[in-house]
Image 1 (cartoon, rainbow, N blue to C red):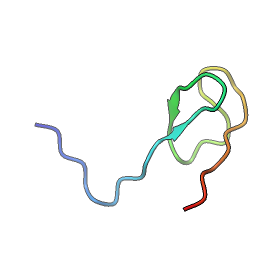
Image 2: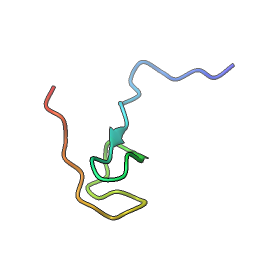
Image 3: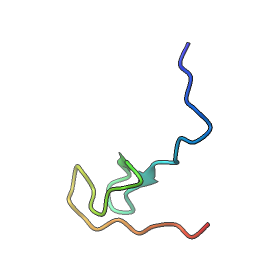
Length: 40
């Protein structure tokens, strides 16, 4: 069973290729396009 603490942040999806990236990333780890942070 996989458990994530409630403090886990939502991954950021690349608008260009759709790859999930850590929320701390500023560029996509796959295509290197800039990531746009979603406003909460």
